[in-house]
Image (cartoon, rainbow over all chains, first blue to last red; front, side, top):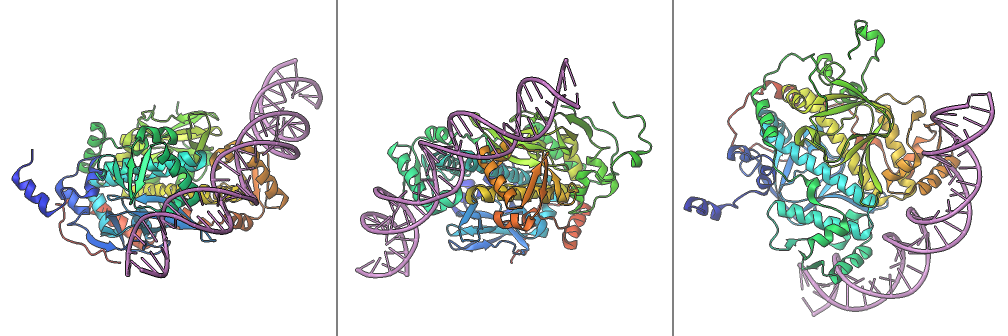
Length: 280
Length: 280
DNA sequence: CGATCTGTTGATATCCTTCAATTTTGGTGG
DNA sequence: CCACCAAAATTGAAGGATATCAACAGATCG
């Protein structure tokens, strides 16, 4: 039931910035809070496809949230081969290492043309300490990313080629869905088979064979940079995965209360010395 | 029950708890701050070897810091194979997911007899918001862990068996050294070859062959649960790795100042709406 | 509308697994 | 201290999943 005002707003601006949609899933942010990291609080920048946005070890004064497009973290080996560590979707944070340490241990490259919102290290740290709900929500995002890294380790360590490809397609499906970027059974997949291979520790030739197999079994269609997931359950079974690790559920009322309580008790106290029950 | 004779504390107990040594490397903590998470602020618990300390998905009210011994995170596949995701050494935090979400997406098991310091979720969150230096130091620890996960992905995706084993031995060396657990060229390595294999996505038989090769080349000795690293540079070359990703350097003065400044400005302000320069 | 990526397919090579002994180590009780 | 047992390490032989290399077809884009 949309009213006129919100309709006319929708015409001027996208209804939700992806990062608000993504992070609010855990803990709703007020419009003011959302603006601190969004369009009005951070500088918009744009990059073409296949450009290093952040170089390994490079000192930086600012971080960014990806607003549009797709990017990846990667590391290059001495012989030129590379490993893609993770994919960045709209709403993803570039790297918290930059906030605290001023540089990253890996490179970040655009895969498509991308738009980002940049924010200075100093400002981000200030905002986090002043706004516990923002801190909590960014923390949640970092935990989610960590969970994705663990899942990738499991995939690379213990799944065969079919399992790896299936798992990655599932993850991309769930993540796109979480930020509202799927339409029906379709999602944008602007990745070459070389990029999939570099993410999965396989060769492009073998990724191709696996994908052809999935097509022949009617699990997916893939063409013109659009992936159609015709049988998600089937993919999940091959990839032996579900979306639990993405922790897409909102914060429990207790957790939310805990966070809000912290924001009121934000004055320093002398370091406590008593025990506080912890047993379970 | 608490020990009755803790007056002569300094004489009876080790001078530094491992987690203080580990975390203070980034940003020195005052004794009072250190106590908040250490012996006096958190409850000591003990577990035998090969026990699940935290089960996958299990709801928990407390977290722990590992004080002594070795543990691992792992996930089990449907067919019973398992993937060890990472190893926990003294000074490592069990899992921040528990703090924010109340449970983890993986299990944590002891590999040896372990001692832990447990702290309730609620208390930890409170402490972090009240003590920015503690928050910063835990944040750093989480970033370090994330970097280790990325490194594991690179190893599993792009290194052969020799490279994987070499990299893991190097990481264990650096991490033990960082908490003062090496002696000369030796470090404790209470892992079976099956456990190494489960961490590296290999079979125990093949891990054995690689280790035998390293021994024959004079790179390492390994017996009685003690690893002697005779040629770290050689291992690094085979593993194509260095310790940069562990970020063992202390916080820069600017970063430390940024953090301390945040602790004073801890009163909420209205959400800012102006841009804040971010360009670099 | 040609140049250049990207995708597709085949033949062969190889690293690692699988399976199955056998030996060694470490722990336990007599 | 030794005997004994289970777990871990070690080694061999054979098989398989994926890599490598090479060629060609199709798509994309200036």
